[in-house]
Image 1 (cartoon, rainbow, N blue to C red):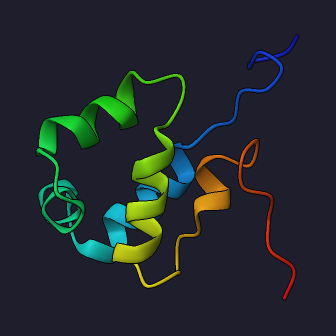
Image 2: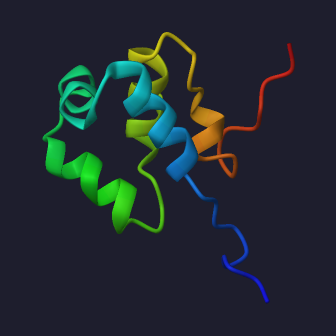
Amino acid sequence: MFLYKVGMHDHKPALLDAIKLKGNQTALAKAIGVEQAHIWYWLNKAKKFPVEIAIAIEQATHGKVPRSRFRPDIFPERKR
Protein backbone atom coordinates (compact mmCIF):
# COMPACT_ATOMS: atom_id res chain seq x y z
CA MET A 1 0.00 0.00 0.00
CA PHE A 2 1.29 3.44 -0.94
CA LEU A 3 1.37 6.09 1.76
CA TYR A 4 1.59 9.02 -0.65
CA LYS A 5 -0.11 9.89 -3.87
CA VAL A 6 2.03 9.96 -6.98
CA GLY A 7 3.90 13.25 -7.13
CA MET A 8 3.67 13.89 -3.40
CA HIS A 9 6.79 14.16 -1.32
CA ASP A 10 7.24 14.11 2.42
CA HIS A 11 8.71 17.49 3.32
CA LYS A 12 8.66 16.83 7.08
CA PRO A 13 12.22 15.48 7.48
CA ALA A 14 13.65 18.52 5.68
CA LEU A 15 11.51 20.88 7.72
CA LEU A 16 12.58 19.20 10.96
CA ASP A 17 16.22 19.58 9.90
CA ALA A 18 15.68 23.29 9.25
CA ILE A 19 13.97 23.73 12.62
CA LYS A 20 16.86 21.98 14.34
CA LEU A 21 19.42 24.17 12.57
CA LYS A 22 17.62 27.36 13.58
CA GLY A 23 16.86 26.19 17.11
CA ASN A 24 13.06 26.01 17.10
CA GLN A 25 9.96 26.72 15.03
CA THR A 26 9.80 30.36 16.07
CA ALA A 27 13.40 31.04 15.08
CA LEU A 28 12.87 29.41 11.67
CA ALA A 29 9.68 31.37 11.14
CA LYS A 30 11.45 34.63 11.94
CA ALA A 31 14.34 33.75 9.60
CA ILE A 32 11.98 33.25 6.65
CA GLY A 33 9.48 36.00 7.48
CA VAL A 34 6.41 34.02 8.48
CA GLU A 35 4.50 33.31 11.70
CA GLN A 36 5.34 30.24 13.79
CA ALA A 37 1.83 28.94 13.09
CA HIS A 38 2.80 28.51 9.44
CA ILE A 39 5.71 26.26 10.43
CA TRP A 40 3.38 24.18 12.61
CA TYR A 41 0.87 23.88 9.77
CA TRP A 42 3.49 22.76 7.23
CA LEU A 43 4.84 20.29 9.74
CA ASN A 44 1.52 18.81 10.82
CA LYS A 45 -1.16 19.40 8.17
CA ALA A 46 0.16 20.47 4.77
CA LYS A 47 0.19 17.97 1.92
CA LYS A 48 2.32 20.14 -0.38
CA PHE A 49 5.03 22.57 0.56
CA PRO A 50 5.09 26.12 -0.89
CA VAL A 51 7.84 26.64 -3.45
CA GLU A 52 8.73 30.11 -2.20
CA ILE A 53 9.15 28.80 1.34
CA ALA A 54 11.44 26.00 0.15
CA ILE A 55 13.65 28.67 -1.42
CA ALA A 56 13.51 30.85 1.70
CA ILE A 57 14.52 27.95 3.94
CA GLU A 58 17.41 27.05 1.66
CA GLN A 59 18.63 30.65 1.95
CA ALA A 60 18.03 30.86 5.72
CA THR A 61 20.00 27.66 6.30
CA HIS A 62 22.80 28.74 3.94
CA GLY A 63 22.11 25.75 1.70
CA LYS A 64 22.26 23.15 4.46
CA VAL A 65 18.61 22.28 3.79
CA PRO A 66 18.25 22.57 0.00
CA ARG A 67 14.99 23.35 -1.79
CA SER A 68 15.15 20.00 -3.57
CA ARG A 69 14.39 18.24 -0.27
CA PHE A 70 11.07 20.06 -0.04
CA ARG A 71 9.98 19.99 -3.68
CA PRO A 72 11.94 17.48 -5.77
CA ASP A 73 9.08 17.61 -8.27
CA ILE A 74 10.14 21.18 -9.13
CA PHE A 75 13.77 21.35 -8.02
CA PRO A 76 15.78 18.28 -8.96
CA GLU A 77 18.67 17.43 -6.68
CA ARG A 78 21.82 19.27 -7.73
CA LYS A 79 24.82 17.17 -8.66
CA ARG A 80 28.01 18.23 -6.94
